[in-house]
Image 1 (cartoon, one colour):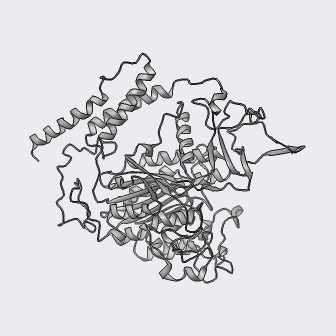
Image 2: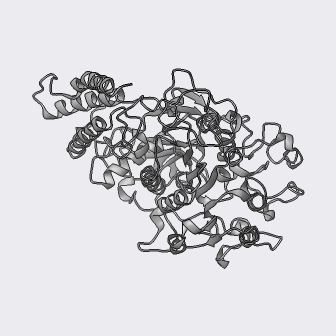
Image 3: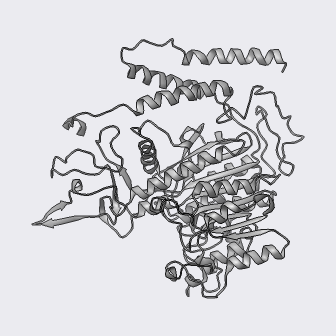
Length: 585
C-alpha cells in the first residue's frame, strides 16, 4: 500500500467516524441530557475504532479475581468510584474498557455450583473436572488417590504448554501458592486440600502433596517467578503462632530451602524472599528464579494492613516485579496473577474486604498494562465463579455501596443494606411468638470490618453462586471471546493466541487476517505460510494508543478524553428521588 493510498484510506475512515463525535446532534435544553447523548455517541465511535488483532501472542497475562462474579464486579466498580469522590455507578474498572468481553459457564462435571479447583482446571487446562480436584480429568473423583496417580488421568495446563514452547512462566497470588487457583497450573491431585503431607491422611497415602509437586515436579519446578503466601505448607513457616492453622508438614522438610538449593546446584541465580522490602531489592537482571512467600498462610486482606507496613507487598508490586523478571525472555512469557482474597471476603459476608481486594486487583491490572505491548501481549481478566451476593433496591444514585439503602421495608418498617447474601455467617434474626425479627441496621456501622452483611440462610461460610462469570480481553486474538462460552474455552483461546500446547502445530490464521507483529522464533508457525502485512494499520503507534486494538490512536485518545470529562461531570451530580411504592411494581 503506497503512502498516498494509506493517507486516502485513513482520511476516508476518519471522516466516517468523526460525525458521530461532532456537535451535529439534536439540541437538548438540559446539559445532563446532552451529556448522556454525547456519551452514547462517543461509545459508538469508540466501538467503530477497533480492529481485530490476529498477531501471535508472545506473552499471555491472565488476571483471575477469585469469586469476582458479576455482582461483586459491579459493587467494586461503584466502590472504586466512591473512593475517588464520585457517585460511582458511572465509572469503570480498568478491564471493563477492554475491547472484548464474554460470559463463561462455570459448572463442574459433578456440581451445578462450582468450586475454585475444578474451575481453575477448566480455564487453565481446557478440560472440565469434578469438584475440588486439580489437574485431573473426570475419571478422578474427589479424594480418589489411586485414580489420580494414573498419568492417563492427568491434564496439562497452559503453564506446561508455555514452558514446552520456551516461554518463561510466573505465578502471583494473594493466597497460598499451593491454593486451588495456582495449584491447578502445576499439580495433579484428587483433593484440593492436600497442600502438604500433613493433610494427606489415610485417603491420601501414597499420593504426593501439592507443595511437593510445586517444588520438585514439572512444570512447577520450572516456574521462574512464584510470589504469594503459603510458607507453612512448604515447611518454611516463620510465625510459631500459626503452627497447625493451615497445613503443617510431617516430613520436617523445608521445601523453600530445597528449592533454593536445587536452583543453585543447577548453576542458576535464585532468590528466596519473605518481605516487601526484599522484593523491592531484587535485581531482576541478575536473577534467574525468584520465590517470594510473604505469609505463612494467605496474605492479609488489603483493608487490614496497617499504613506504612513493609512486610507484605501489594498485588500490584508483585505483578510488576514478575513482569520485570519475565520480560527478559526472548520467547515471551505466561503469567497468572490472582486476586485470591476477593473470594474470602465474600465467604465471610464481608463485602468491605472483598471490594477492597477487587480494587487492589484493578490497580495491578492498570499498572501491568503500562509495562507490556498489547500488539503482542494477550491480557485476560476473569473470575472462576460467582458468589451469592446481591445489590438490593432501591438506594439513591451515589449511595454508599457499603451502607444502608435509606428505604424502609413496607412490612417490618426496618431499613436494610444495599449488599446482602443468601447464605453465610451474617444470619442475624430472632423469633418471638412465631414472628421473625431482623436487626436494625441503622444502629450498626456497616463499614466496620467485623460487620457481616445479612444472609438469609445461616452457614458458617457463605457459598459460591452458580451464574456465569465475565471475561474481558485485549491483545492478540482477544476477539475470540464473543458470546457465552464454556469455561474451559479460555485455555484453548490462550493456546491458540500464543501457538502453544494443542495449537502449537495448528494455529493458522484465516487468509483474511492481517498482522502487525511476527511470531517468536519457536512459535512462528505462520512463517512461510502467510505474508505478515505490516501495512494493514499504517498509523499504528503503540506509544500513544491506550489499547492498540484501536485503528487510529490519536482519534481514540480524543474519544477517551471526551469520555473522561463526561463521566467526571456525571459522577459529581447529586442524585436522589423520593421513595415510591411504584418502584416495587
